[in-house]
Length: 158
Ligand code: FES
Image (cartoon, rainbow, N blue to C red; front, side, top):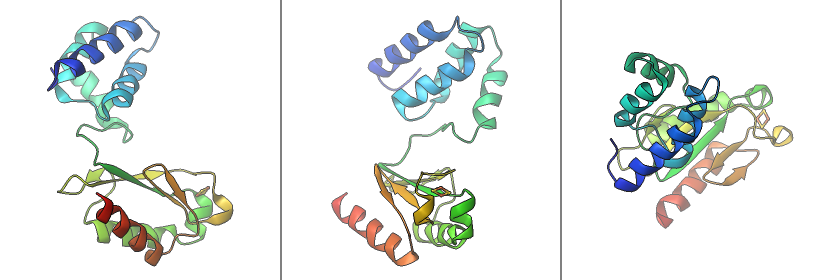
């Protein structure tokens, strides 16, 4: 199943705890991703078996929702807000800059495993649009220069 015995046991605990809920697939997928950071392909057969679904059905749901990751996330996740207020204040230009600077698109991870990039739809900082979150830290009124400055310090501290 997964690389480590601990992950294996954790996944089995999540499946066992949630499999009898109505519509158990999504809670199980969320539970596994919350615990491991992604949904390893090796967990799909066990999920399918527990829910009496085909592997293709489980995989179809994982790939339908962009929120679910099939690969481990980078050490730090960069979230760029794509909601209305931030878009009105230039988040599209910001996201183009971020993608170019990191060399990845949304839902991807840099080759060195340092950063993943994900969209988010409102960080509650609309008054300071455009906004982003890097790791646990929120930033408002984000310019390309501010992004470069923050990411550089993240790279130095990595
Ligand atoms: S719309 Fe971006 S923080 Fe609310």
